[in-house]
Image (cartoon, rainbow, N blue to C red; front, side):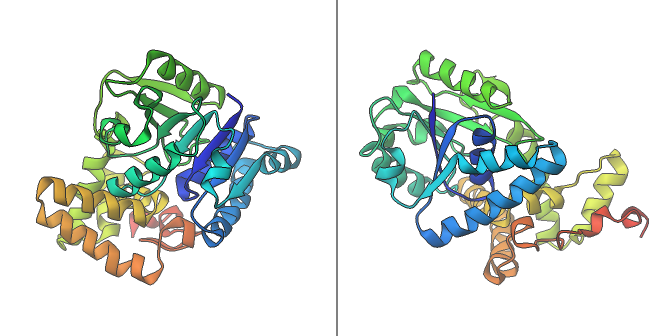
Length: 297
């Protein structure tokens, strides 16, 4: 395992790329256009600043990490010598299936495919990969360098050697590996987090309470310093939208459809994508919840 390709330079894609390069791998970051890659470049530079603060990374380490990452909008070029492809593109099944069909025709036979999907099952995608025995799910938490879990989930046709190779790779980039015994939508993390976040979003969308009141209630009543709308901002509004839109369809849940619609009209259509763009539910880089008086107001 030497040449790692990350498909998708959104919030998690850029984090996975940076973390992988930080631990010495050669990384290619792929996305569909140079404009999108431009945003990815800015995110990588910002991640260097986060690693300096949170990981005590030196300027030399950051420079070496960035030098190990190349970027391209040509999928065939990206995959030419890939040992591992980690896909982190939008949570839309048709988009993922189309991507894997294209990747299957470009990647060499040796390449292992791994999806970072948060909500879909690898068995829903496996046939499109053209290599179901060399395909599985590898899920990272947001802020990968601090919340360093890697959930590895096979589907029934995944070869054991593929599973073991990906577990070893995840450990080599500083992750605590969490093998999943069988397919489970949401793995461990999102099986716990998604009901929590969607419950908060439904309260907000149904105008039961405003988002600050919901966050304050959670923080005060549980003693936690972390609350649901903070997580939505960090994960990005696109992620929250696709999650709620998918669940609304799967569960025939009108209130989740209302959540998705409000996120679309009040945030996405106004260019408010969360922390990445400086505004989501809160404004960044100095969100109100970091104010020492937040819980007493």
